[in-house]
Length: 151
Figure 1 (cartoon, helix red, strand yellow):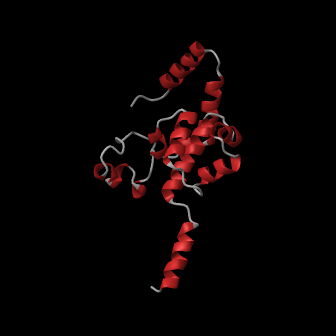
Figure 2 (tube, rainbow, N blue to C red):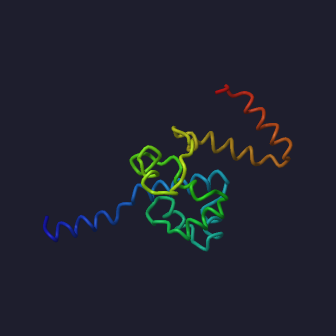
Figure 3 (cartoon, one colour):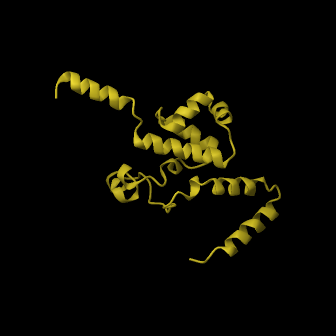
């Protein structure tokens, strides 16, 4: 490969988001949406514009460690949340990454399908959190659990 071909390949790959950045961004979007928070509100909490939040969510801009820490704090999730449900091909549970990188994160059970990304799930979670009375919300939670088949 010539130097020109190598430079062209590097330039093309720089414009393509990393699959890991896309995954992390999609998890940011998922959590923000579950909380019913707009990109603008999240941006304000982080000192960013909503356009910057959009770029993070699409994976166009890589999220640095300190920004990931801030996102976890604002979205009220552990940092590992952003890496949950990552496919094996990107270093997910079956890839062996956790065994090669001590302390990366313990394997966590996650949804194997796209349940968290369905509109129905988002609407249900939003409606649930709109119930202001904690005792009623707990009773709704218990009702839903009782209706589901036992494992």
